[in-house]
Length: 201
Image: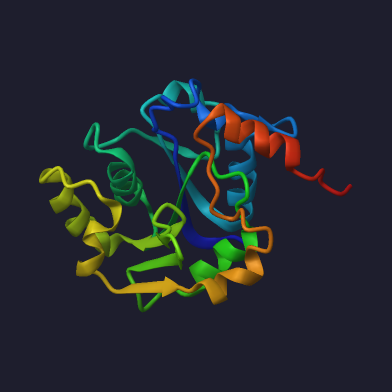
């Protein structure tokens, strides 16, 4: 059942290492943007794609397309733009190049919303801020960092009520260890294409 929440897809990266738009890379004959949209449609009533190439996404008729309010500010600017246009108090944010999103885990994160402004997984590598839930309460703190050109995503966390989701909580949803994997290079794409199991019919 769709919840009154927003799903934000960040599709504004420069893709310098991949050499092409990562949103349109295919795994098992399915484009990453389509795979993400199909999952989002099961969860969210409101979907926003943040991109600086809006014409490439016009076919995503059930998603709102937004371009960065503050240009050239990286993922933090994309999060700000998505939250700014969100119609709901909370939004889940991820980039377009995460092929192993888990619907149950996204819903688990969303279920923690209410008392917190940021619900973010925390692994041995640190926070996973591009696979997290944010409230619109974050907008003023993010804006302040953007205007100072301080673009570290977690830089505004100290101002907010943050709930870190531990590795113990993450583990049931991440049995193959690839939940937070994203694709930056042709080699990473090739590895995923070569190892991804076929979906059961």
